[in-house]
Amino acid sequence: GIATSIKKFQINYQENKGIFLPGYTPSIGFIGTLRPSAGFTFGSQSNVRDLAARKGWLTLYPEFNEQYTEVDSRQLDVQANIELLPGLKIDLNGNRVFSENFSENYIVEDDLYRSLTPNTFGNFNISTLLIKTAFSKSDENGSAAFDDFRANRLIVANRLAEKRGINISDPANLDGFPIGLGKTSQDVLLPAFISAYKGSSASSEKTGFLRDIPLPNWDLKYTGLMKLKWFKKRFKRFSIQHGYRAGYTVNQFQSNLDFDTNNPNAVDQAGNFKTEIILSNVNLTEQFSPLIKIDFEMKNSVKILAEIRKDRALSLSFANNLLTEIQGNEFIIGLGYRIKDLRISTNLGGKKKVLKSDLNFKLDLSRRDNKTIIRYLDLE
Image 1: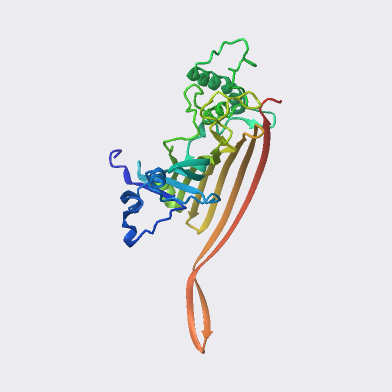
Image 2: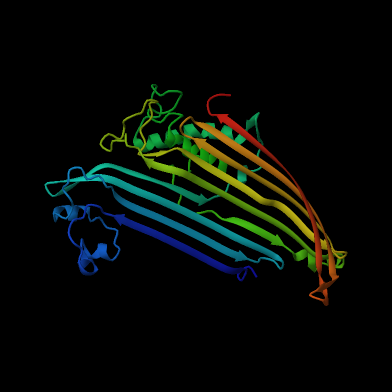
């Protein structure tokens, strides 16, 4: 039964890449005459800038300001439908979306392509799991996950320092943090934040902002109680549902134009190493939609629905090192009744007809509470 429980499995991967090369001066001729290269004509994404400059195909106009551009987007979706037990349906799904744009101005000098102000920007989203900390206490008086976030910073900072060969026991370290990797460093904050709210170990959490493998989210529906005599006698249908969604999102990342590849140990005004990529903020979202839902119809055609939903959104800003946490709780009660085969006599166009159909009444009541908490990393 376990071996044959997977009823459907689907993977969908899409990739889009493109190059815009402005300032190309020769005529392209019939079907492009394979210029500037055969690979480029048929969609290759390899670099043709240097070749075009050496061949004299790029404009020499000194005030030319159109930007060379590369676009790259990739999307992965994974879905699986599983039936472990009769009446139990589980839908698993995961996704990963990456989008990146690169642009630069250029000039050509002595048949050599010279890049000016290259800039990369993009966004990223991936499904994840935050369920380990979903039910931990978190209010305006305190949060265990936030306390872990604070403590994780030093663990991450020491890991990064060891990679750089920095002495973590240097007496010059400020507040115990290695030089260049302080408590407000983006490179330190991001892994500390993710590991705290995932409930993972800060000593093994990946330090970059990208993640490779989407973690599964799910929807569950159980109707197997209708196989029991007691339920079959009293209900027309009876189902229990549960759903979970969680995601990690980088709204925008972009190149740090102040970062010098020839001097990677340069520090910013806060004394932290300058990062090659700047993040404005990162978000973790989680939804139990629903946490639990009971939906049934009795033999007397009375329908009853009861549902609990729970969600939270965590947004970490690297501009001011604030964490904004939004919590939501919702309760829904529904009542319905069905009059079966209601007959209505009509006289349309002088012809008498009897219409027969079910008449459904439905009333839903919901109450939702939202709370927004702003947490300061180094202020109580």
